[in-house]
Image (tube, rainbow, N blue to C red; front, side):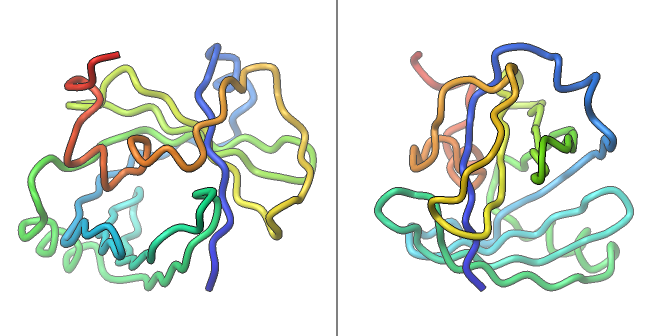
Length: 157
């Protein structure tokens, strides 16, 4: 399956008022190779293993394969993950015909807040809420796999 996704920074916390769902996510990476990543994620009461391929030139689409697994299996696999687990609270907000997922990172990535939107096609139009800021699609620093390797708190901004 090909995932088409765009990422944005956030300019205000108004998204919290519009969120219909809030969930804790813990994830780690078994592999962060530039051509493929293997992620283990515990999202609330569910868990997944995900493999992602290399992104296209714009960074907006890439192969993604995901399978639901038992939380107990995910907890065991997280023990094998590379250093620096990712922890975040995800807010889901419906805007027009789309869902924005806004991730508030904690731990080593505290202070970073990113919105993502999944699209059906590369040039699909969507409504942009007023809390949406600069687009960072394709900037690999904002990939979760990279945030586990070079956490936000270590960036020289």
